[in-house]
Length: 313
Image (cartoon, rainbow, N blue to C red; front, side):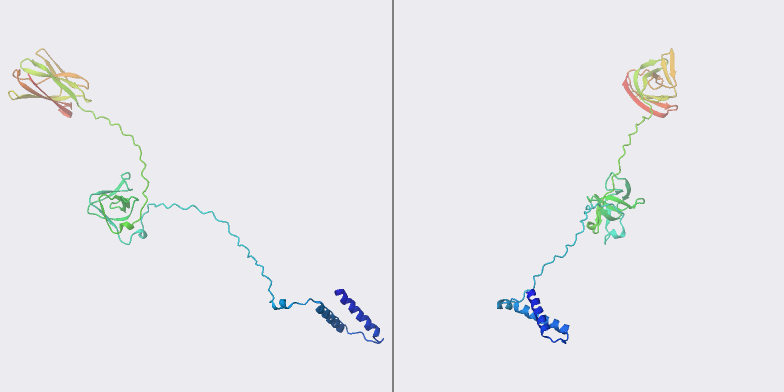
């Protein structure tokens, strides 16, 4: 089509050139361009396909819009969630902000210890006495002990057992405190008890003797840990109600009228026969009681021990 139009334009220019006189002025370039353009437009209009009636009635459909997806926002890398913290109640010294709107007071019907923790394993820090009250700030998880202001000097706060306690005020709204750690028990070795030295002896009646009078003889054994240094020898004749007593810082054994042996002390483990005070009569057939007291020091002092011997002659 374009080639036909150009050919036609060339023929027109040739015809015009042949018919024009020699002094013909050159055609106006603008007018020629306008004429050629009109010819080209006419040719294009005549050869353009005609739209059918049906197509003309249909409204021109706008080009389908191509949906443009907005750029997807880049997600920030997910942060690793931190572990959920474990809520642990810790014992705190209550501040004014922790106090309930109404005061909670505690009293007891029996004098009760106030300890550094809720239990007998904790040391005693004070005592809540009958007739006294104390401010309550909280309890342990079992609500068997109450956290109070110490009624006594020393630690500012302590724990009171609920056994004998009465609370007044909104105590159900009080916080629960975690008890302090139980004091570590130290195994203190039990001290070995050192036995106290003491006077101790055994005694038995072994017979009677005479020489210008009569006396009774008692065999003594020192079974204690102290030496025996003095004595009180008392003879009681219940038959005729007679009594004889001898005090001495030594021990004498009379052997009839022939000899006499004495000791100033009887050492632990030793034995010795002691003669009683002299009787002016023969006690044969009488009921006799002997009370013998031996002591660790002279003058019947120190550690003393008495034994009773009772028999019939």
